[in-house]
Image (tube, rainbow, N blue to C red; front, side):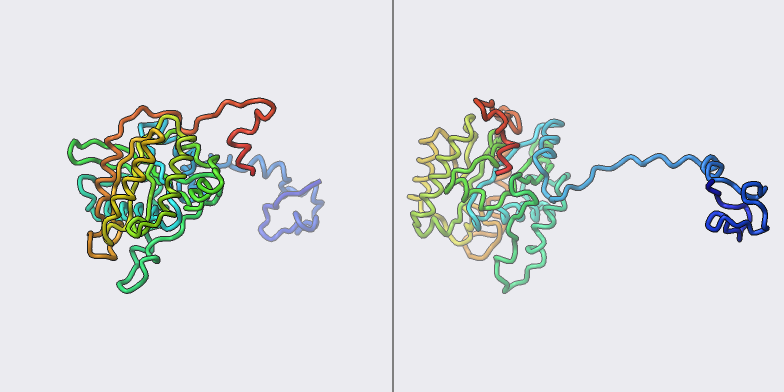
Length: 323
């Protein structure tokens, strides 16, 4: 028989089965068996209501992004671009401008990915004059290389006090490289629900008339035409405007290629930071954000399920990510 704690302070009957007063433990008036102790305990406290937990990755995963889109309309922006094309720099510049209330025409209200935005902007906030501009941003890394990450912004437009949400994809440049070189698109299914797609291009590449970069962007447009059937607007975002304007012949070639595949494309030159003399930091960012809000196209299902076919019915998106 198990003996519980004795009412005598110094008794060790529970450990030694020997009564401090040399009584028979089973008959000692001071003993308390385990069942008695258990019955005497107060009921345990109710578990507190859990707050939403931060996910392993600081960016929002597709499920979290879809949850926002189910609760209210959100503008989904797909951002593509090869490594070092300025994708992260544009997000950092937007965040810093909002933090200083300097994004012309807009005010910051909220973000479900505030920690992620703060993390990617850390380098820019501690940057010192004379240091390499490459230290201002970090390479995008995701906790799951098969799942896209998203940044969330809730803003207010000054002109009409309209409040709106934006979800901006934050993807490694290697995903765009894989799309171009290997036509890998399984991780980009979310683009089928995008209101607009930004294709980031390093402005230095278009100023030097480097046909290689121009050719690769054309291939990207060809690949996109196979992924998105609703043909969302394309914004060719040319970074590093502070170093000068791109060659018009290169811009015209990209616009013509987009039109050939049924896309309505426009160009948006920006300068996320300033390393040259032709533009101030943040040039073009407010206009880029404003262009997204102006797009009021019907919003398709966020992560559409493609119809299965043949014996490979189970090889849908979830299965394909196991490659």
